[in-house]
Length: 442
Image: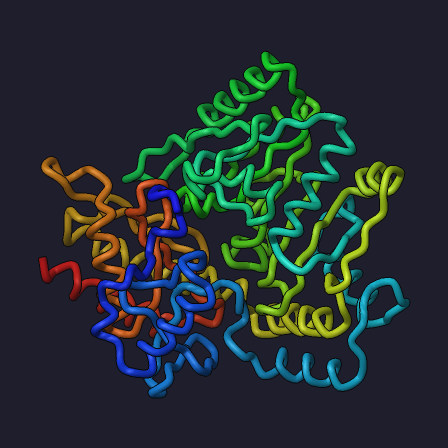
């Protein structure tokens, strides 16, 4: 596996195997015998969770771990209302979308109501990867072009087509010949992205595609630029680049797998902070709180172009059990006020992280929105170089104290904090206090 791959950013390398108890050692041995090295484990000392509730994971010894990382159970692990919806529908019927279904149609209507009227069609898939793969097909069919523009360290998924637009996999997985990357040129300490510079980079990518005889099919962006290091400000910086791509004949695909469903504390979708109008939106497993349901939301004319050339069928995508779970997720987000909660607790979290920044030169910047935060860790001779080693020390130090986060960014030096949405101010304080203890050890 390429050494610059995001998959190795916070991975178990076997050196700490002697620190594991017999149960964990046996699980590692069995995993290596079945998976080999293809699926890295998280953390220097892997975790063995056996149950979960809310923002807590519990290991095989029933020790609690504060989950400040997992966005897939967006309304909290094993939320009772989601579990109940799954169980009741599974006991009644589970089948695909080629039959009529009140459960499926009702959820599709409710989901589309969360978007502007121009985005009035939806296709269900089983994962974010499938959604991105399908969105690429739709974009290329509609435009008749092949070129795709992504950010420099983007992660969009695992299929053959999507891996070609995922530079975060590193040199071991080359990007496609018709794919161009644009750097997110930001002042890391301030966390701000220049809208003009980003649009200029997209313009240069379009020109380079044209010089090679390739038209632009789509600009696809994770609207929180998560894998690049989490860049969300200033609100609106994506707009000039999006409008430029659309004027050039391409589509804008908003990847909402990570920022969507209220995570950023500003409406349901990350793109809304930028005042842009996507042509296609891709959603992932947070929509079902971890159940295998995802989606592509589209303008109707795009699906008309797609349907004129082919059809679409996905055995698991949009099955009745997953749609029941997804409907329960919408209910919980609305009725428990989780978007507003994400805004308030996220502000509290970033304020605490900002206090830490003022105490140590190790933190070059704190950025984020809602319940998504990034902490830039630096060091080196002049104290300003990205410090991946220190970032991993902090991540694994928190894990040893039963708090779970991870890293992101091309240099692997950004602490990535992305908890389930019920995460509270008390949980945020526990995280920042523990991180402070680790930082001041040095």
